[in-house]
Figure (cartoon, rainbow, N blue to C red):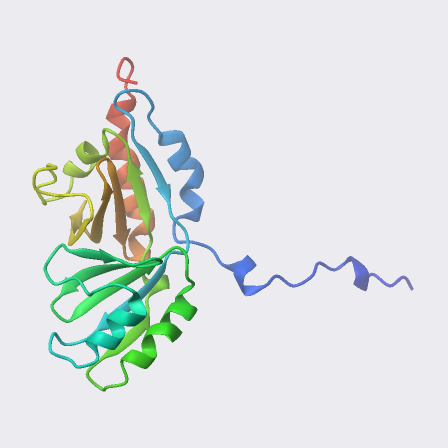
Length: 211
């Protein structure tokens, strides 16, 4: 009897089996892209490391935590502080979200955890909790304005800020990363709904004569 064991594919690693919340929408996002003076582009940013941090404003561990982050914790609503490999978003006076597209979440958690040994502090890997969409282009703000209650005018919403808000009735974290660039972070369970909502909101800018 022939030995067919050599024909069996090698088992895939965990990294190879991993899928992102909106991976199945990639072709839809690509087809929805608008070019020209009213351009807007949507894509998913996959596998962003997200680590939640809870620490009281007066906690003595804050100095050690900031040293390990490489930046001070942001001190007000909307503020974002950045280090060499992280961005830290203010969510509440004692809650922060640390993002990195350079350091894996496991390594980032290991780096920060020793600074927060107390029972009133916490460091938690939240990477699987949210999807991350990047919306860019001259029409990006107009797309968001269809379903976001925030005042998105550049005089009010500045680049380098982030807020907890709603978009199309979905709770999101909205981070403005550039003058015409936004990072939209819904819960992973809302990724399909919000991704399709954004595509629909982009459609009018692809009308004949506008691209």
